[in-house]
Image (cartoon, rainbow, N blue to C red):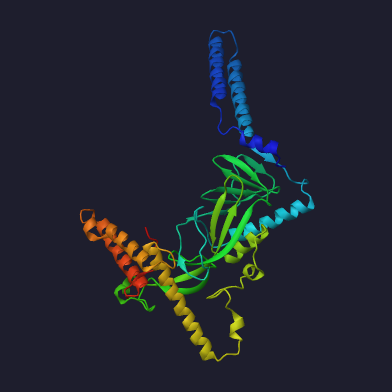
Length: 385
């Protein structure tokens, strides 16, 4: 079982093999064997004494090595030591972690990642790294039960029967399941990478589009409709400054994980019923009794509104302004970026840098035109510098 005393032993365990005792034993064995061999040549000792000295020395070295290795790993035994409540809780945690692990993809967004202001507004996917969820190695610990973990930018969280252990910088810090704060919310993102298996697609948008939503004919060879994926977002906070932000391609798996740790998640969210173009749409409207033509027109308008919002969101990201920014703020942001990427500023740089600046300037001009309502083209879904 995991106690404070055991945790202290784990954190204070030796991390490397101490080679000095092994070298002393090995050197002493070689010296003793050499002396025995010399005595044998002089007829003072039989030959098997030298062999015995080598064997005893090698055995002693192996025993020292095994002892040091044993001190580097602390064994935890739970079989027969878990009561019904603890076993049930641990089983629930394991099940929701299995759900996360089976999700097509889990990303780490970093502690500074912010929740989208409006879950219905598609935004470009933020900077992200792949996270790992599964039966991960537990450094210095060997338990007789399966230990699941989440490995992200901020560190690794392991889930034991008693609670969670946060592993960072070679040390473990405990946090009870009740103290582990988990938040859940949804978000819609343009997906330029390969779409994860099982991801929920709620719309599409052109990578390069005119303000009216139609594809820009100037980009015939490099224009595609990007899927808008509805992902689950998790915030995990705990002791030792843990502040983990995760993006999960399977929104339902993320919702179930959050619900298991006390987060407020509706039954509809957990069962994936709030989906489609606006998390409240579904079969309920199909049976509303309205004429099919009216429903199709509304569906078409919803798709157009969705693409319009997507273009505006991408334009705001390109210029680095927030939703609701004034004309003066938009103009100031445009001028600041133009001073950086204008061709005159990069004419002495390498061709790759000039080509990049030229492309960025096109995107900046298009975003400015989109936000000011002057026409032009917008690049969607691309991560901006």
